[in-house]
Length: 371
Image (cartoon, rainbow, N blue to C red; front, side):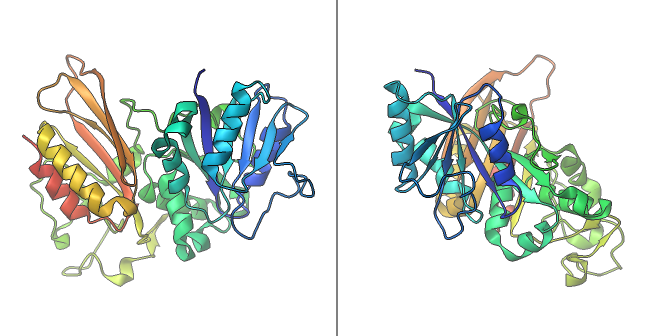
C-alpha cells in the first residue's frame, strides 16, 4: 500500500487554523482527508467542527473527510487510522494533524521518523505554520512556542494582513525570513488557500532543492560587515548577520550589538534579536565525508534539542553526486542526490534554523571539515 501523506498544521491561536480546516473538511475538493485534532491543552477551539458531545473518536463528514480527536497519543491514533484504512473500514487519502495553539511541532514530526509502525504507513509531507499578522509581533516577542513554530515551517501562511499597515506587514515578513529563510511566505485572506499550496509540498523529501529566500542570501553578502563588527573578512562563505541588524550607518566605534540597534529600524528593517535564528554556510571546497559526519554527529548530540530544522546540498569529496542531508532536532538523514551537472559550480549550501545556536562554532567547525 502506498504511504499516506501527512501534513502538520500549526500556528498561533486565532491565526485562522480553524477556518482553514473547515474549508478542508467541508469543501468538495474530491480528496478524502482525515483530520487529527491534537487535543492536548485547555483550549479546544474547534468544538464547532467536532460534535463535542459524541463519544465517537472518528466523525465522518458529508464530503467523505473524517475527523478525529486524539485522546491517547498520536502514535496510537495514526496506527488505528492506518489499520482501519487497510481493512477498508475507513477511506481517506491523506492526514492533517492540527496541533494546539502552543504546541511544539517537533515531537509530532519526530513520530514519523522514530516510530517504525508509523513510518511504514505514513510519509510526513510538510509542516505548515499560520501566523496572525495583527498579533504576530506580540506573540513572537512573548512566546518561544510561536517562534519555534516559525522555525519548523516548510510553508508560512500570514493571515489578517488586511488589519495591519503595509510597513508592519513588511517588518513581519522580514522578521520571519530571518527566523526561517527556507519557508516561502504567503499572505492569505480568511484561510483561503488553494489545496495545491497546502498538500504535496514535500518539505521533508530529500531532494536537491535548497530553497532559501534569495533576499536573505543577498543580505548575507559581504557588504553586511562593516568594519566595526569585528568579523573576519577572509572566509570563503558569507556570514549571516546574527543580530539581523541594520547595515546602514553605525556611528564610528559603536559596537554592532549595541542595544539601541535592537528592535529599531530604518524603513521596514525593524530589527529583532529573536532566539530562533537561521544562518547559511556556503563553500566551493568539497567536504571530507568522515570529518563532516563526525562533526555533525557531535553537534546534533550537543545542540539537537535546540536545532529545529536544517538542510544541506553538499559537495562531498569522492562522489560525483550531490549529497543531501536534513534533520529535525537530533534526527538526521542523508542521501545521494543527482550527479553535479558538467558546467555546474559545485557549491555546498547548508541552512540551520535553531534556538540560540552557537553560529561561530558551527561555521568554524564546518570550515574545518573541508578538504
